[in-house]
Image 1 (cartoon, one colour):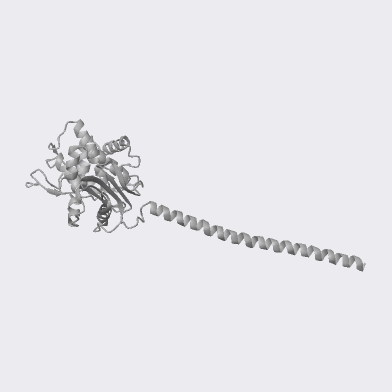
Image 2 (tube, rainbow, N blue to C red):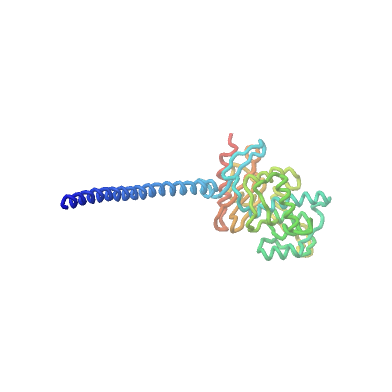
Length: 324
């Protein structure tokens, strides 16, 4: 009987040791799993963090030494890209939209054999839409007997929203129809990363472009003599009307702003500014340096309305671009 009892104790002891060893092994395995999970989690976190950082840098939010999210410089004389800093990211374009509005409108005028000197007026539809969207207007009234040239220059030089909408409304019959024409033209030009939802550039969810596409648009459009003149004239005096007997005087906002910086490295031949709260500040400029012409496009400078740090971006990048 005692022998059986002792044998039972031995079996129980071995069983408990075996169970205990399994328990310890299980605990060790769990601890190892926790450690490996922690290490793995850390590396996953760092990978995501680095990936996000690279995406942020690629998106232009951290362009070192610059204020804009995207900068694109193209040598128009030699036909080559000089700088492409995030030039292919889709971004809101603000009033750079009007660069396509101008192009398409001139095409339609040519098809209809209309001249810039012919009479045209702000339509009620265009005026009401512009007021509703709180856009810039230089002061033309509904029905005021001005000219197409006056509307085009106010649109490009002063970013007048009423003139943009009126041009579209007059030439196409509907603003919506004109926007469709703009998108078809963008497709025909191979602007794969551009889509329009307005003619003047107010913030729209699906309206975007890239620095590269804006450059392509200008490379083609500036070949047209009327487009080139509207884009590069420094000053313009509108026709006289009963509402404005002395006419209205405009100046190219881009040329004038760069003159304030007294830069001597290059000359601004023409340009267009853009701004909305969502898009931030943008610009497209035709630049001359060392007898060569360049197109410079910046997008996505987020700042206070009075800041022109994107202008400083152009000055900085053109100091080295085109040097012999």
